[in-house]
Amino acid sequence: MGLKCGIVGLPNVGKSTLFNALSDAGAEAANFPFCTIEPNVGIVIVPDERLEILEKIVNPQKVQPTIVEFVDIAGLVKGASKGEGLGNKFLANIRGVDAIVHVIRCFEDDNIVHVSGKVDPVDDKAVIDTELQLRDLESVQKKIQKYEKLSKSGDAESKKIHASLKKVEEHLLGGNNVRNLELEEADEEATEDLQLLTQKPVIYLANVSEADAANGNDNVDLLRVSVKEEGAEVIVLCAALEEQIAELEEEEEREMFLSEYGLTESGLDKLIKVSYDTLSLITYFTAGEKEVRAWTIEKGWKAPKAASVIHTDFEKGFIRAEVIKITDYEKYQTEAKCREAGKLSVEGKEYTVEDGDIMHFRFNV
Image (cartoon, rainbow, N blue to C red; front, side, top):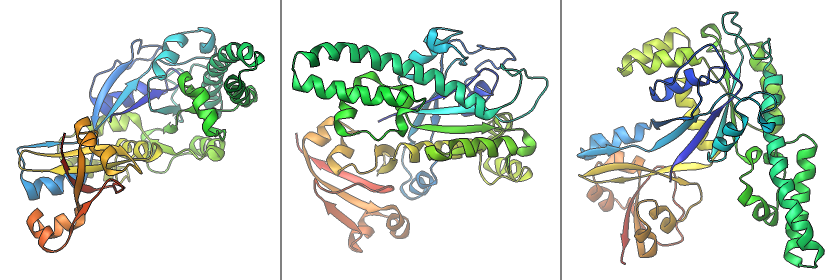
């Protein structure tokens, strides 16, 4: 399964600079709104030191890491839900992502014009929230109209759907995001086809100056307070600094560069890790002479479903899974020695895959 994150925010907050750092895709970064008119899509490798461990042990012909797809979407302005700026395009593009990375400007720079004339992270967040809520409200109310007629006819299922939609409508009318509403299973089913924008998980990315990259600033503090009740993560980074880090090829150079700014890891590495945590994703591995590979699945998946990301036949004809923990593989160095030490377990259909498992599936179709 692939992970797709949409990078959103007001114009001139640093979205395209961030995207350049993420993917080296060269999205134009310019001091005017809407320089990113078509969504840029970048495929970014997920850093995982466990792959390096397996590569040293197995010495495969190929190593295949897992990836994240980042979509840089045109800047949103007030009134986008009514078609202002590039609103309709923006809102259509964001529907297809799994999570939203909301970039918020937390730096002062007289040379970079702020779309509303001043740096105010709380207000900027509110603008984006309002536009997404208004678009969701429009989607919900259209469906309400359809089921209002059906529910009046006495159809029990239509009445349930109508009640669920009214619940969501009321929440949105109160200026709230759907992700903060406790939905029952029936509510989830009633809204699933709408792909509600404010229901998607969100990560707030506070873009600061180089001087504030390590410790943040007052604007970041204000942002953290404003999102506290959401339970959402706030990541602090300097997009311009990350762009420089991304250009360094040697790991030693990167570490020295980070150290100069008081950082222990790049903000982009942190962003990818938080994206996985936010969506409850984990990684398991397959390891052989031809290929060592990382596979992304949702936390809690049973072995047959986890096998389906390799091929649907693996799930259909699942017999068993042979599992080695990565710590044991690192200690004993070979599958045979792990087996001898009793560190290779044979698991059935009810086994819940854990992060870092090395899996070998047996199947018959």
